[in-house]
Length: 110
Length: 113
Image 1 (cartoon, chains in turn blue, red):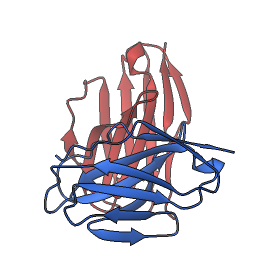
Image 2 (spheres, chains in turn red, brown; image 1 turned 90 degrees about the horizontal axis):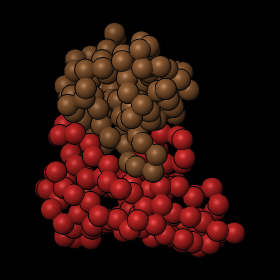
Image 3 (cartoon, chains in turn cyan, red; image 1 turned 30 degrees about the vertical axis):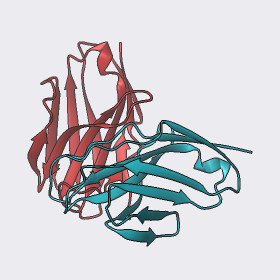
Image 4 (cartoon, chains in turn cyan, yellow; image 1 turned 135 degrees about the vertical axis):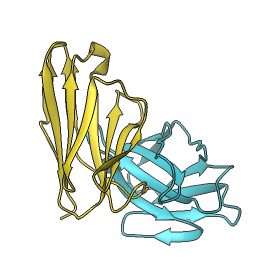
């Protein structure tokens, strides 16, 4: 299983773009990169998933370089409600169990 | 409908009690999961059901007993729990197992006294 490393915490201000990087040096060929958001006392919410280059949806963008050893979740123009823990997971569908790393606590200030 | 529901929202039980947590989804997903989450820690996988059969048991103590009566329902039966079992218990589902695109319920906050 590919181990992931993320910053423990990040601070930002409302209206700024936030980039959270995840390191996964031993990612396997069939592995995808998935990001979740979790608010206190709620279940995690699937945000975005990608394999290579760039993926964008209505919530975020995911940038994956050619070597796939890292990925960056980009949240455009954050608001106070984006304050949450963000988890990066790496693995393949049909593979072994899902493991959540420690996550990144994002705190957005007014 | 992309919702996973869990009942109850909160549960307080003594160490000698027997209780059950319930999870339901109507997305046609064939995989369902139980996770345990302690405060300020990431979710930890407990069990995975695939097509109503237990496919992964992460060495969970036998005082936790999962059950999947049908493809939409998942139960977690609790018996003789310890105070350290107090946590947020999360249910999730996905189209197949093991998928990284999972839909989580809001969780049941369990307190063992």
